[in-house]
Image (cartoon, rainbow, N blue to C red; front, side, top):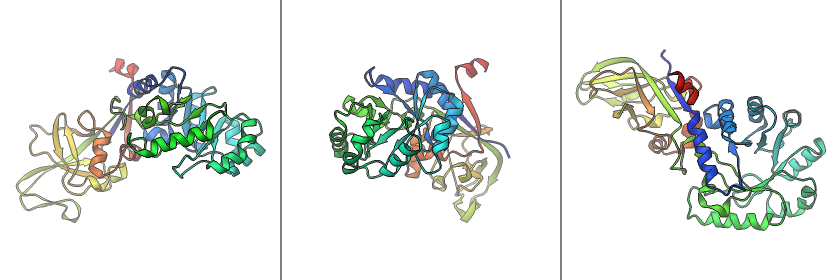
Length: 353
């Protein structure tokens, strides 16, 4: 079967990092979130591009992700593990010089007992009720923890993509109440928090989805393109069906293209009879059910039969596609399958074309 091609623009990722970096004061460090395999785009290649752009602190979800990033970057850059110090992680944290963001009293105890003197950070819960120490817990352990010299104290905003949501100001106030005067670098803002303004920036910001071309950073450069090859074309008469469950019935003679991709590649069934493919600037509707490996589309109106159709590209970004499925660009990105041929684009590769 022909292979779909996922294009990833490393220069665009670097440009997005620099743009987000410029939004905060020069004294504020800008990190980079590369968890979930850099939002599905390949953490090793992406982390190296971000390091070349100037990023020196990276955030991953779990220690195993940190191992991949350390392998890509080598010694030097700090790699923070948002999930903290889990049972069984001690050797990896030590050997790869990872910095766990400790989320609970149990994690603090585990880390200080098993790796005394090893760098760590602290995550606080300012109202999201997901990860981190709550105010009474932090008050109880802060004197001991601060004596050990944490690298960073952070929290996470629940509604930063909604600038007027009262939760933003409430969490900011709680973060101040929990951390003012501690003498440790602090971080509250991911992409959405950066866009809320300097009150949210503190000493470190940690952009994520904005690096990869997603909302709420609407000024971002597009990062991904996804081209799906056509493997068969057939004429369908009026009244004939296309695909599973008679999901589409032709109302007149149609020319139907069968395309090599499906929900096994992260293209959800919710795109059935709803999403649009593109031949250049010409829209091509998906017709019938998206199946595991195949999608069907109506190309009756095209002047020529193309070799492939785009589902992500200049005419349709990850958030546009997410809107069709009633989800968010994060899910579209992280769902992109491993069967795609990945093509990394940078200034160097453009020079070779």
